[in-house]
Image (cartoon, rainbow, N blue to C red):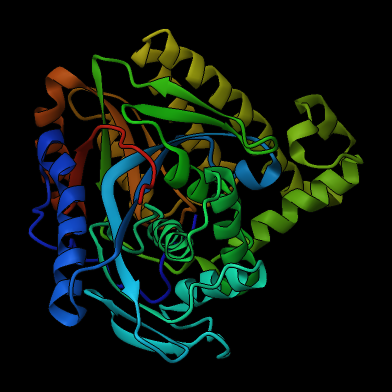
Amino acid sequence: MTELAGAEMRPSGDFQPNQGTEEAANRAAQAKERAATHHKRRWGSPTLVSRAPGRVNLIGEHTDYNDGFVLPMALPFDTSVAASRAPGGSEVEIHSEGFGSVVFDLADSIDSGDWSVHLRGVCRLLREQGVDPGPWRASIATDIPAGANLSSSAALEVATILVVLGLAGVEWPPEAIARLGQRVENEVVGVPSGIMDQLISATAVSGHASLIDCRSLHSEPVPIPTDAVVAVIDTSTRRRLADSAYADRRDACQRAAAALGIPSLRDAQLSDLERLPPRLSAENRRARHVITENQRTLEAAQAMVNGDAQAMGTLMNSSHNSLRHDYEVSGPALDQMVVIAQTSPGCLGARMTGGGFAGCAVALVSAERASEFRTSVMDRYRQASGKDTVIWLCKPSPGGSL
């Protein structure tokens, strides 16, 4: 649920906003090609090129760090890292098309406010586990809008881990890659996020969302109903997750679980909330969201297996209401966008997605009316807010690869 610190939102490369599924699918290859081209111009042909996708979470929000269930899908928007060994020394040199260049020694201290914190964190934690390819250099290209709640930082972490492991001649299972990416967020960046973002980026199956059990890390591919398409809708608002109320929400969940005497809210039932004392009223609301969201997520996965897009949409609407009122992580632009989406032609359901407060909404839309839906939402949001929106109609993409 984190994004690149200090990042500005801008669609990268030649991709134009408001394109359909075919155009969006081409975007991933563009990032990969740009990374390789930039690297070749600077240092020669890369030895390895990795890619890792961003994600949108269909339902199951703020449940991952409560050992619960989530239902994300990988997006056809990649971060790509083209890399090769450096001739000598002990430094890593990175050039990003969006953030410029950085050179660092593996022994340097890490500034959590710098965009390269994710790269440095990956290198440090891998080195602590005996994975050290020596000096290397890389070019990075991305098509994931930063700060939009589409997991730009998780994609960067997964893509970087894949490259460093490859340069060192080491293979790890995707679950281990995801865990290391989560450690970067928790221990280096300082955001107490769950594992959902890194896990879907590392393990996604093409054409499917994934029902993930965040306690066992078991992931089950779930097909998107054939008569529906996923619309990712950018409100053009941004926030920095580390500066938001994210940590407060997680602390409230931990307090609720402790008061109930259980390891996490994954183990709670709605009836258990009667045992929370009145002074924990905020904790009660946070816990109610987590408990009901876990149930909604399981029901949504079953609805998708049954091909019941209407039932899936209804559950998404309920999820947004819970996030807005019980978990209180929505925001004015998100609420406005969700109402506009829900009342536009072809919409089956819509909700905020990601950590909250700003960024993107997600909608499930009838495939037959997707273009009509997109035009309606764009026009109505501009009239209501004075802002333009970017809408992507997306099919699920595969997880990271080298």
